[in-house]
Image (cartoon, rainbow, N blue to C red; front, top):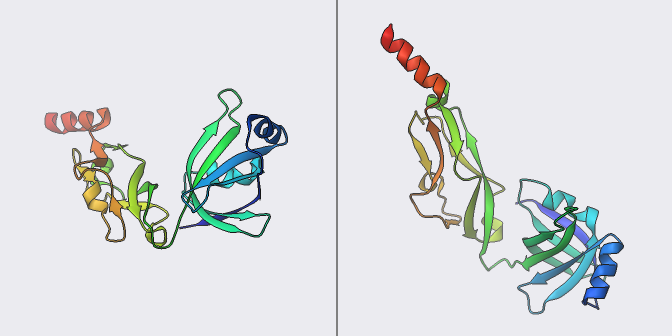
Amino acid sequence: MKSLTINASQRESVGKKSTKDLRNAGQVPCVVYGGETVVHFSAKEIAFKDLVYTPDVHTVVIALDNGTQINAILQDIQFHPVTDRILHIDFVQIFDDKPITMEIPFRTVGNAKGVRIGGVLRFNLRRVKVKGLAANLPDYIEGDITELNIGNKLYVTDVANENYTILHPDNTVLCQVKTSRNAMKNATEEEEA
C-alpha cells in the first residue's frame, strides 16, 4: 500500500480559541489515536490534498517537528459545511502486528460478455471493507468480470483473499450486468427475424 508523509508540528494548546487561530493561519488541527498516548498536531491544509482528494487509500507517516514519526491511517475527516475546507482530521496509529480495518477501492478487470451484447454493468459497491495487517492490504481489490452475462453478479466471495478478511456478508453483490433497453431491443429484433 502506498504511503504519504505529512510534515506536522505538535500542538500544546487544544482549546477552541487555539484551534480557530490554527484554521485562520491555514493549518488543520489533527489527532492520532490508538497509541500509548493521544497525539495532537497540526499541518498545512495543502499537505492533505493527496490523501483526501483521491479515490486511492494510503497509509500516512506523520513526521512531527520533534523528530517523532507515527504510522497511521485516516479514520475520520470533517469539512466546513459551506466552504468545504478541512476542519479536523482523526488518524489511527497502525502497528505491524495489529490488524486494521479499512475500506479498499474495488475495480473490475476484463470486458463482460453481457456488456458486449448490450447489457449494462452496475456497481453496488465501490469500496470493500476489509480487515488485515497493514502490510498485507492491497491498494485496490480487482474482480474479473469477463464471464458475466446478463443477469449475472459478482459477489464478495469471488474476490476473497487469504491476506485479509472481507467484512461484508458472503451474499453481498459487488457488481452485476443488467439488461438495458438496447439489449431488449436487439433481442426483440432477433425474435422477429
